[in-house]
View 1 (cartoon, rainbow, N blue to C red):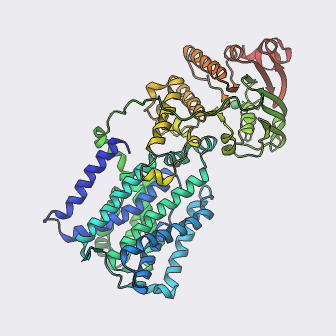
View 2: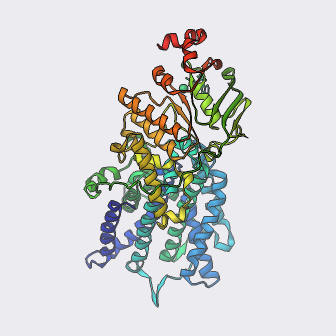
Length: 591
Ligand code: ADP
Ligand code: MG
């Protein structure tokens, strides 16, 4: 966690934990704050799942139910002591989330939220109909938590437990977001393709964040059961799931503290509305749900970022200046000489999109330590060829071999593992993350710290090396001045350079650059050319797509020319320059 986060958390902790000590705060308010704390845990998970990971879930209340019912059953029917049930409550919630996640996380677009609605309803009816857990009456007589011999009845007593849980969860979540696994999660929404090409297992990252969010909900359920001392299925209904989602959205779906703000707003509003609405309508009912529904729709229309960013602006003076990064101790480099002389061989590769043949029976080779240019007019099939080599698209026909191994049919992640790195013609960076963090994603495969290590901050030594590596590559492409800026704020040419740095972080033996010089000024192009030459000198091979012919001609050892998906020429730059067919199809217009 950066120091600015730590300071913020310390201030927040001091305020929150001092509150119940104040004699003039009425018990009614303390009770509300307990509810806010419990709801904050669920909302915090949703901030990660929905705001950061881009997966909307209406079904989070069901996981609260798993946590609550597990401890309810164990304490009332089996006489377990409440603290002992905590790990079991978390385990049941985690296992349930894993099972549900395995089948729903793969759903894309609107099918995922629909899926969450389905199991959200499903579990409500399950809780409500199972006789062993009291069916619609639920379970009552749940014992309170104890602190040594002292029962934590009353809101003032459990308040501290709840808010310590919230504070620890905030700290763990911030740590997670600032870890290797967390960067993968943060890249899900905007840069899943690029993350996958950097070796991030996108599906696994989604599943992890799904289970993590469910565990926070399970913890909330466990606390809820011991605070209310009773569970009823109605508390884990789809309605409540919508409320939790509203909390995450209102507060600011991508912001950790937004979860607490959102939980506070919704819990307080619900309290006021439950008193006020029946007076307006004349009879009792859950009218607040109508207001919340309308509010959710309005909010999604007007301000998707919620309220937190506006408030966070006031705290921004807390964030310090980023410390310079020592690039001495970087990640260990792989061997550049192991691979056979012939590195990449594309053999009769064909790609059809319906009736369109984007790449038509194309063959070429990239020998080790060579820079090969791939040129041709727009729409010639250059980027498609890149996608075939990197596994983003599958070949319709033909084969692709790399270092003697057939690689067509492998996933982008498997290809990244073979140390093939790429940039994208249409830049794919996570715009909200810093340049440094984006570039660090490129080193994903070179680290090994898992989710738990991230949460507990046991990954510091590795993280230092990852960031040293990222900073080193950023300096190499000349972006050191922009290192701590958000990637989305950079000019397009600079974003391309950031993508090159990210690709270099993968420690590639083969680097594919798709129009890297587009948008660069003359001096920047010269610097880039010098860098590419330097990379070749170090043993790297490069496949280069570029429209700037001076750039291509001065750099490449061989050039392959595509036109309408077909290879029309191949040879040394000087030959290509004189080639009639190439002049006709491309150079005539480009020059
Ligand atoms: P280049 O990079 O040489 O400009 P592309 O490889 O991007 O060309 O595109 C080659 C052809 O394939 C174009 O006609 C383009 O419209 C088409 N194409 C590329 N990607 C797709 C896709 N995913 N679906 C359908 N057509 C595509
Ligand atoms: Mg292209």
